[in-house]
Length: 638
Image (cartoon, rainbow, N blue to C red):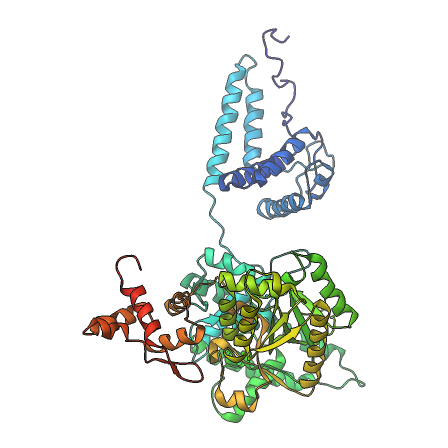
């Protein structure tokens, strides 16, 4: 006979095993951990996990795996996948296979060890005398929960290891192998790092996946946050930390071992398939494998890990080292920037800045796209950091069976770039100072054939805030003084026609050319003088490097900031600022030169005799005095 004062929510004492409040306590525990972790980090996913917890508590039946939980509300593919992964880990740690219920049914009870202990304790509590107050049971459950929290708090933090064939995996391996090569500079630039790491990664480092804005390069920020990678200088230089070097060495040893096993397995399969009608091609590979193993032993004696190589790569490197009688040298590295596109292996594609197709008067901008399509011009719309139109030589690639999209082809930027200006846009850019800055950036972008495409738009220039004569003078100065080629057209249709003609002209010009890749970072902006004269139209830079180098608001050196300051002075053009920088590269050096002058007049005329431009004219005393007053006057300028 039960006590009438006994609480109605007390567990029935007739059961040997108490029924848990949730038939899936293990899933409930994991979801609670995920919610608490997201809450500590301030992530909004905590609300998603909380909704899933509420749905799970309402479900009265046990679940065999995370996939079955998808029938519940607020359970998506992501949460179900996490539960399955944790369930498999739980099986590995606590024995294989699910733990079945005591009544012999098929429904598993996924109980963690901590929950099993709590259940055992609670069952013992049930076997105690019936007159024990129910408050002790709740206190015991609270103590058990505190023990569970302590166990979770003492878990060791898992070491970060990037997934195989991911962006971080490829970057770590590439930097490590580059550092192990003799004569290595200890760091890599972004473009050469992307080029060498691409074969080790399944995703592209430059082109995002369909429906996503992230590329394989996005994982570099994670490596920097985990203190595995260091980014320094401008242009950026990437190198490994001590922690990153240790992790990369571990990944490289695993990669090397897997590649050797793969080569041996392939040779064994070829031996097994070998018959009277099959030519035996494995004898040479076995000899090469023995040579590779000997080379691996010698390298281990020198405590230098050997990078993973395919059979063909090993064949080429061993034969070269044997013929020369010298140790193995860097086959990629510097050679990575020396790749080329032979004739017929690429196509000429017009690149249109995305600003030219969206925003503003969208009807007029869409008319340009329609005209290009009507003229059967192959074009691509993308973000250009300088200029409005340019052309790239894109490598022709064949689709790979089983892949949704073909591999990403290499791209080299041709030496022609166009800045398009309507008369109203030209007027606005002259007023706010963008006109001079744009011309300066076009000269510094690394392309040797800048073009200004001016749309005169009939009599529209007569109604602008600047006189038409001033606009015509600015256009003439752009061609005569700045050295740009200026093409005048009347409207959008003529602009599209000019772009069509230029595209076909470049297709004919580069028809039989072998295009070589050059790097601004390693060779400078202009390249070698002999190369410019002998191979002017065949030495080109990659589109990635060009677009990154043309970023407007990237980190600038003191010299570049000084040049921008000088160009804000009325009458100081890009050529004049460059001439001043040749003599005084920073503000500090200029002020030191002023301090060494004996009189005020000598300071005012310090810069007057500096030569600038093609005609080598003097800067002049008036401009020299203005610059002196700007940097040496303590009070306000009069």
